[in-house]
Image 1 (cartoon, rainbow, N blue to C red):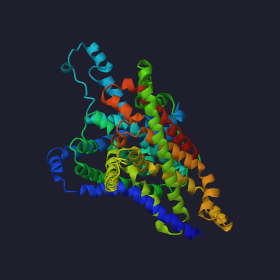
Image 2: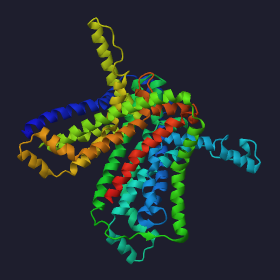
Image 3: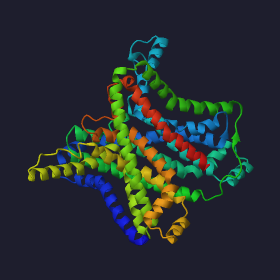
Image 4: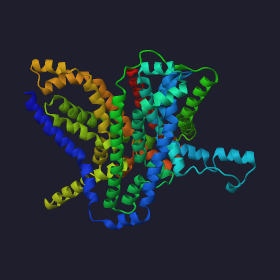
Length: 543
């Protein structure tokens, strides 16, 4: 009975994956179309600069995230100092802050007309920009700093976990040999944590590659902005698809590096975990330096931008703009809720297929369906619109042949596009959460249910759904928040006249008037704190 029904699940699983893989297949096929003129022009003029900017930005952001996150991870994991327990979760707060908001806040502060340079001119008696030197904020280096401030928690989180999991006997041996804390860090802790750090840097690199708003605001031309400009500026879908496939190659390299790092991490972590507290207790100026470093990092990455947003929201509060705010909030709520529901249902079906099927190849749908999370929003948007637009043309041709009114762009010009794109983008998040829940369910419960005569439907309804309920709720929550914050895909997939909170805020950022959109920006940040709190609780339960 189970095997017979699992074949039906198998067919359904592969049909789902086929639909989810359509954007990727369409992207590759579109890149092969004979539209060489625009791409050749890009290749002859600016493509090399775009690639160089992209690679350099990724390297700078990775170095910045490493320089900021690694010391904080070691201090919080291996040392005891005032505020250390508070910093364990507070260091994750920058994940809730969109990078383009941080970029606007610091640009407003550090530009020539901003308070920082104004104070310098007042103290130095300078009048013109030529009278003194101040680094250009809107530059590739400035974009790298802004992204580093937001993305370093990936390195912090994974490195801290690796430091906590290192075997206590190795730490004890290093102390017996007379190693100082610094020597122990470089000779023991850092080498053992390298695979986890590599995974964190891979995530930082993929997020940097996917960023559109920050680099666009800073006028830094990368492959992500090139895809957007080639499509909307030059009107060449094929050239945009070629640029997207070039980015896909880079993403494949990053994902391969992450997978290799995870394999090495599994080998390193086979030693016995920590059974005693071997933390270094910092006192005096060392304790003050550790607390000061973590406080300053948190202040500049989250505290200051959040405080300025709150000040903007209070000072520029406009009751007449509330109607737009509530309408766009409702749009975001509707889209995010639909995406959260769809991703949880699809992830549940695919993970359940992988669990109950006796065939090994039925595990592939769940593995393949999560590819979308690695795609930048602009790339995914093109891949989504290609098949939906062709489907719209087919629907209109059919309606014309039947003598019926033309329905128009019922797929690519409606909420179907944005919901489908978000579902492909965030399905991996739901898959990971539900897979973790399934792994905690003992296979003996499946066998006991089968002995009692339950088929796959009965097992799912009576055993797996109740036990995986928390994982499903967590998946829905995280997907909901991610969909609320998503910007690049929303800019390209939203119907005409349809705005989300993210696109609404970005309009103000583009017009250099974030203070007028501070309220929706603050809502995005506050909503983004929910998965941060959940993530911290998960880490506390783990350790």
